[in-house]
Length: 244
View 1 (cartoon, rainbow, N blue to C red):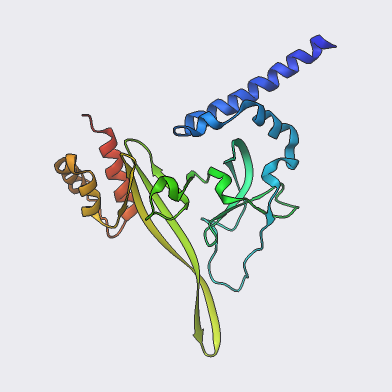
View 2 (view 1 turned 45 degrees about the vertical axis):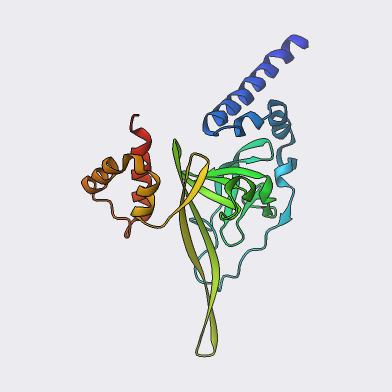
């Protein structure tokens, strides 16, 4: 009996360890160190009863509001999330950009959507996008606490903070409501966050390689007005790969 049990336990341990190792490769700094192997096993054993499915019920928005409240799509997407110090894979999720909350669900066809307690969500990813939580204590007083999409990571990290609000307009005695999105861009360099509103902002932050960056921008015809995100990502990635 014991001999039959050991191989199965070994396989389970190796699978859990493999998942943890994959996660560690993708988590910057201390986040990987906080992932506990024993708690990973616990979450796998508990299944739908795991801590991630405990929270407040998410109430959907009215279908009469034009647009969507969520990131990219109203559909459920499978993704990964670091909740507390437990890493979960292949979780059905949505990111509510109005309330800045991550919504999860045990099964797409049944059950209630659950709103996670945001301060415990350290990071999550889906649709090839990674979001990290930034708190006021670590970010500085000018940066709002919440979830930021990580655009690129290295010596300099580029982040995007997108939020949605519900606007109202009265036309012919009727109230028309729609979701409106605003986005701001930031860089993190030498433990300092900076707001990026234009090309000059970015060049002043990366001033020690300004001439090289100006040449790169010109050569690649990067347009900060028409495509701010792509321009920022391209310049920061180029900077991060420069030697010296």
